[in-house]
Length: 149
Image (cartoon, rainbow, N blue to C red; front, side, top):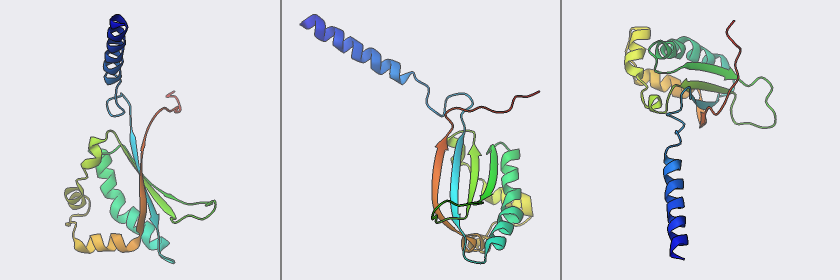
């Protein structure tokens, strides 16, 4: 009985230690994380919103990519929505790690991209252009891509 309890204890300890050696999503090589922001646009304001994203924010996101803060940024519009949804656009930002999600750098990048400070007016203009309905965080599990030729 004592031998059985000792064997069970050793097996549990070994299982625990083996579990702690499994790489986490952030430490696994090649892992990426997506932040998907869902945007509801006021009626008749879609063009205003798209212009704000492409003219004001896209250059900032390009600098984030250039500096390695993010892997990519994309703006998607609902082409054929199925059923009812509370959003018309999503922005998808790909990060190389979870830590990178905390490193936004917006004030200095906005200054670099536009030669002016990120201020309350710009913040209010952005907030007025859309309602952020919700945000999802996705972690890459597996993938297949086109091969380099």
